[in-house]
Amino acid sequence: MVRALSLRLQLLLLQALIVCVVTLGAGLVAVWIQESAIRDSYRERMVGVALSIARLPVIVEAFDDPDPSAAIQPVAEVIREASSLTYVVVTDVDGIRFSHPHPDRIGESVSTDPSIPLSGQVWSGTETGTLGESYRVKVPVYADGDTGEDDAGAEIIGSVSVGVLESELAADLQSRLPGLLLAFGGAAVAGVFGAAWVAALIRRRIFGLEPDEIAEMVGERETMLHRLSEGVIRVDHRGIVTSANDAAERIIDRGALRGRRADETLDGPLLQVMEDGEPEGRLVLAGERPVIARSTGLRDDRGRLVGATLLLRDHSELHEALRQMDGQQSLTEGLRAQAHEFANSLHVVSGLLELGAYDDAREFIARVRPGGSLDLGPDAAGLGSELTALLSVKLARSRELDVALEIIADGTPPAEAVGDIVTVVGNLVDNALEACRPGDRLRVTVDATAAAVRIVVDDSGAGVPDSLHDRVFDEGVSTKDARHRARGIGLALVRRVARRRGGEARVSRSPLGGARFEVVLPEPERVS
Image (cartoon, rainbow, N blue to C red; front, side):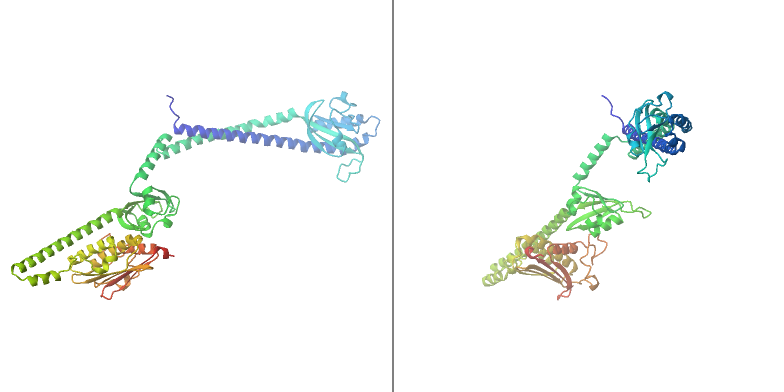
């Protein structure tokens, strides 16, 4: 099997071919320019010689002699030899020669058309005459010897034709070719050596890899990159996203990221992680998704922009699983407490029956609340199963913490908003429970109308300092222990959910003495 050419050899051959083709083309153009320059130089000299002869008084006056050639031939030959021309021919209006390099041709008619100079024009070009193919110039001879522009009406008595053989022009060009060939040959050799150096440099830059190896590595990289569950975003020193895998685009949820500016597609906390560098990871929000973000940083040790790689791990499922686990644990504790309470009630009833206090037993049974410790009361009937289940768990948790939880519900939330309401209520109640101490009060109000769902959570805890009212919903801001890296996420998520639905989240002082968090979620059809 024939082995494919190496990348270095391919680059060398391709560049050498390009250099040779370009050099050859440039050489041909240079030769053409040189040939044109030689021809123009000869033309200027021949025009000057021809006009000089046509103006000579001895030439003009000889036209009236019985034998014009006797005076014209010697002068023409002297000028021809002095000008290094092939011929100088003077003719009358009938084209009869008065001079010629071969005297035996004198008196004969010219072999080419003399009509152009006899019409008063100066003509130049290549024609074939008695001496062969020549490059020639023809000018008219006026009776008064003038050939200026004012002689439009002057009498033309003949013409002067001077020329040089094309072979002499070719010989002149060939005498200059060695220098041109040497110059372009040197340029071609230098270009080939330069191509060899470039090929070696490129091979070093790509670590000696061959094209098939590069293609295989790129394919493997793309496959691995797009199959990763972790989002990968690469940003160059200009702040442009150069690559982003499928997981990153799913997490960011703003369409294709490649080629866009990072500061236009990434949220502020993600940009901060990317610029600062966070090798261990930081919990931030990407839209409404909690993610662990890690980065190499945009600047090196000298402060120069070098680009960064941002790694995103979606923690939505983990957070949901933890929340569900916490909820199940709280529910289990609540059910255990309810079972314990029910067992105590049974013991009381059993004791009363054994004592024969039947009326007291019936009265005790009537006093026991029918719904048990997890009953939310009649107001919660219209909240729906998901929100009711959530609040039941929070009720069990509040009793465990010795916090009096009151639930006020009015109206039935729309089905399409239940998920967002659960998110908002869950985060606000968790925040409030953390802020409360044993013996504190907590009140949750869910007011659903045709226009919007209004959620208010009041507590009698320490409250939120006035200085934090404008920033408490910002990501990373928390009144809790700053050592907990996961703080400052829940309230930020609440505000993002509210704004997505066209609403807003506010914080103020509660009538209970602590903090009041109020969130308004408009109906989708009413969102502007």
